[in-house]
Image (cartoon, rainbow, N blue to C red; front, side, top):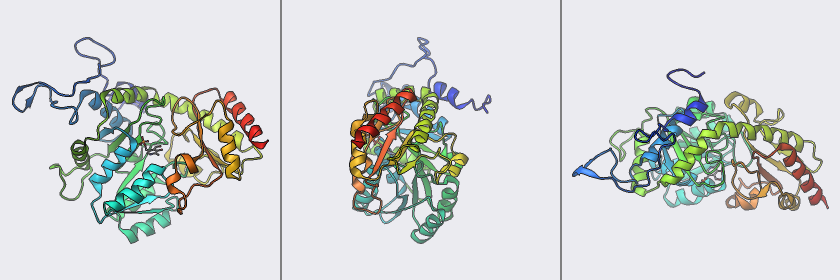
Length: 399
Ligand SMILES: Cc1ncc(COP(=O)(O)O)c(C=O)c1O
């Protein structure tokens, strides 16, 4: 419920960090493109800003909105989702320490865990984290510094119990980081379930219109690093900010403005896309060529119950299997309304073949994507048109 202290989600999405311009009254504050700021005395910035890598008013407004929607203390915006992931890992994990991650993660995240971290002598271990007993055993054995989850996961739509994972991570002194890209804060707020840090590819539903590449990290209140770091405060958020500023991992003011504009309609867009996704998942269950539908909104999905408990909706991505790689590719190439393209979370519906398009980094590994899997990113077109398009694609692929 909203209150004077804490208005409802949509109200915060529209107003936090978007105070009308005090001089002109413009309802949408002007974007601050300046890279540098005048000082009246040496080292004393006039309005608190000195250089836009270190801070920018447009970015600050956007970060305030992100923090509010995820119910965190603060947020940092990044030039991509992977850049957010990289900075959070730099802040939390030192050489010799371990990251324990749920195996079904985005291909680029997997590449970071398996190629970039080992090169920096940080160790990553994947497992099926839908099995909380396996997660607890692995955490007890490996003593990771970070447990990293994606839920719903990309592209298999696994649902992982965030509250249990947080208890498991904290019992071994690890941080729990949740990639909340698929759910968005409109459907799931991991910090309220015990997670320590949330990361996003804002390229997806937060941007929402396939015209932004961005990322974000949001931090739980008072989260301490627990060891000496580069920042004097001892807080994880300050440590991550230090790394962001030191490595220059910042988004442009225009991209921050696009992200903030996306947040204003996030709730409405996500809910409409979820309704379409549910209709499509139920349709797919009736298609003879489909051997398995993966969507947490289906009552028979293994993640359904946990999703009901920790989410306010089931998301807009639906994956399905069709028995062969050839059939999967043929369906991807036959749709007309669903565009054959990577990414998700936008107004336009997309179809893709994860084994080759978004997750090739996993091929040949234990985490390899099923060769007959198709992923749909459901958008906001009329559901009748989307179903008709899938129907004709299944028919074309069967020829
Ligand atoms: C779940 C998830 N996390 C992170 C990323 C990486 O985000 P970006 O492409 O913005 O770097 C993606 C990209 O597809 C993703 O799907």
